[in-house]
Figure 1 (tube, rainbow, N blue to C red):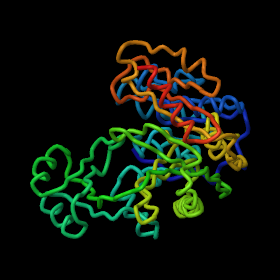
Figure 2: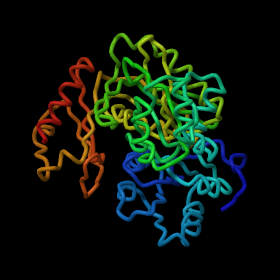
Figure 3: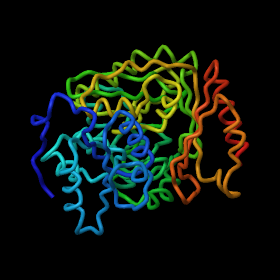
Figure 4: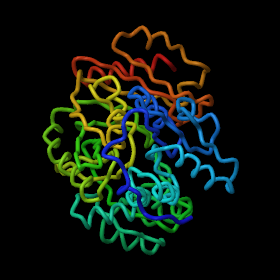
Length: 390
């Protein structure tokens, strides 16, 4: 599947309300993007292979290919309907983005998507451009892992170069003996070996850039994970990390300019024990940690995404109140439909459900945002409300 690289030169100055935005991917991020776009007067089309997906429930039109042979025809039909396309999921075939870009702007471009899809390419490109990353080496065999360990030290974090998220496709290896057991389970010989970082915290920042080159960054979000899946996000961060805000903004703005990103993306960082800010990975789309913006900011990450994609003025993200977000995974439904009364009775809590019918362990089903006088109290209240659902 080949196509000319881009149609950016043919675009208008901006896309006004009433235009059509196409989304590649049909998950909850697309659903929330659709809601934001429709509030601003835009129409939304979704290209997704799964019927009844969360984004399709909200979209004006769902382009659903019948089979593999129907993929190109269905995508072309969506492109014909739309004025611009964007992403809500990074595991989209980059050739689909290129095909769309032959006729309408694709924001972000296929090249940035491909960079983010492959951890080796991503880390290599960032490091070459001078951005701070976790130390790494590409490895393709157990022998090369041992060579990496000699240079980077044990333990190592081994990650498949592609198709890994929420802890999938990665493992911590602490010794040569453990490597023998772990290597076959990774199921790939295209692996990145990263130095284990003793970190104080995991933080993230969301940035947007429009086609004019304007850039806006949200504040740092502080993230806690359980089983490699985001559990709680809070903003503002703990006081000791607020001094990193300027450096994080410079990094995110630098990435946006270096790779000519048009759209919205998230950079996940480790805060090392020595205070260094190190890039873990980039998501070329809205991010789970940014859900806190939906109730705590005067512009949400999804509003900003629409503005970036349509080349509208970007707003300076200003926080209304300290807040925290807690993820609701499928385990909350273990005993059946949760009792939502405690959440709905709380005046500072905001419930967001994603329209997914089947709850599975580890599946993101929704989230709760809580606003309070400080983000630590908000986080504790959010976790307490989630506990009442179990």
